Length: 211
Ligand SMILES: [Zn+2]
Image (cartoon, rainbow, N blue to C red; front, side, top):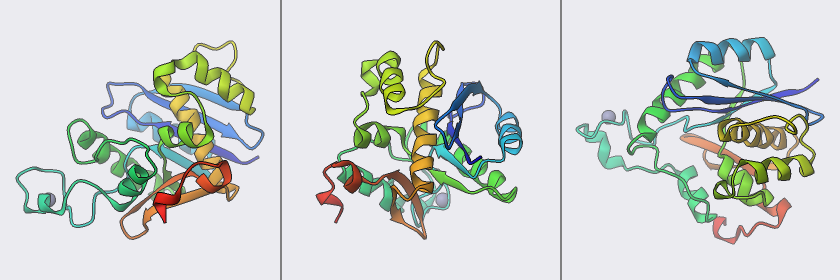
């Protein structure tokens, strides 16, 4: 059975991280985790074909760190994949600013750990899944998204009280599933970092700006 893990990573271990196991039949199992150690333990346990993480997993080219007083700061705030996402009219926060810094460093480290265990990891962006697949926006609340995901065919969400972190983990896992099925697109520069999104061409999402 093919399994995909989706992780809506929090910036710090004291805040909830959404974790979802999605299988090829769209069955889900979700939970909230906190520490990196717990996340790695779960992934080792599940042995997924793919782990999709909603967090930046790389720095912009030319950056060696995210410190403001480092000369690398002149290399800027956005990666090519971030610019591609913005061209698709999908919002995102620069990886180098505010609370995103902690999340970016945590994402990079988690990616290293999981990759060192032999797992395949991709970066995803739940807002891109919402927009391209036409799911309700975050502002519409968790219940509407839960309904939309259930009508899409995702199982195991009904009669369960779910946090937005768990639902973002489901969206992240879904992007990973589409990737395994060849229905996703990797945007960005492979030598810098890529983001996996549902292929806009397959879902009638305007993508002219990308070319
Ligand atoms: Zn630096």
